[in-house]
Length: 336
Image 1 (cartoon, helix red, strand yellow):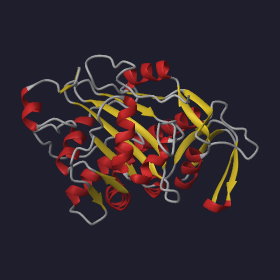
Image 2: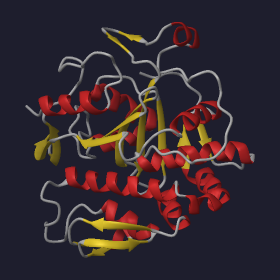
Image 3: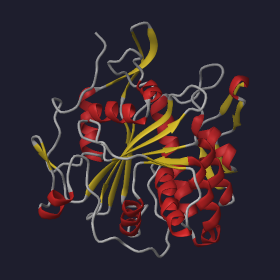
Image 4: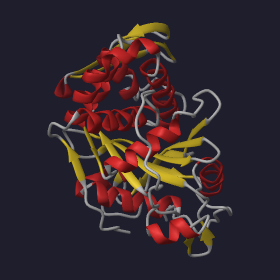
């Protein structure tokens, strides 16, 4: 499913206008692990970006894009959002986002990091060790449609963005007590509403279970839901009037911590369109359901997806086509 697109690693200084475009990307990454918009005045390119596998000629002359038995909805785009683990090289977070521009609807689908796939290393998060293109291909095969663009976000960006807006108020869902000296990770929180710094917000999102095995009753599903709620909380804070003064700081954060294959003109187009997105009513999210206690090929605690329930959620949240996907379109591996 390689698309031959030139990858852009945003690590070098850019002019302020390009930096503004990159701010849109980091906030988008944060909302969906993210998809937000920073309310600033930017020029809007006339040409819409091309979905994966299409051409500008096809996009300009037809309302949708043919892809086998399916037709793409007009100006509907798919994104892979991933957070790499700096220690292991695995993906610490994986999300698929679909943005229906004409209807101003965004669907966010979390894929649990231990999701079972038919690979030598059967947990989907390990697919990132071979690069973001490999993870993109595995995710695309699973959900049944091509991924148009990727955005990877270093955890440092998460922490820096939250600190740049003065922290966030968040309702911690469960008691959290976990220590991992090897990662210098120490998570200690009581449930309830509290003000969190960037480091604290990151710790709440990373929490999986307590030292005694307690924590989220539904495991990674509820962990993903907490991360989604945190991203939305951060996005709303970033988009507030008080945060406009931090534009230069946001530019620096993006340049240091974001990698994407979006072009600057594409980012500008998405940013201009997303200014009309209502974060309260235009965003839907969910997590692929499954059983996290499956052993396959000697690897324990694999998360085996429930095919029918997963298909229903894929169609509800992120299907970019005018017709529903079927079980034959998606590829959900089941342990023998």
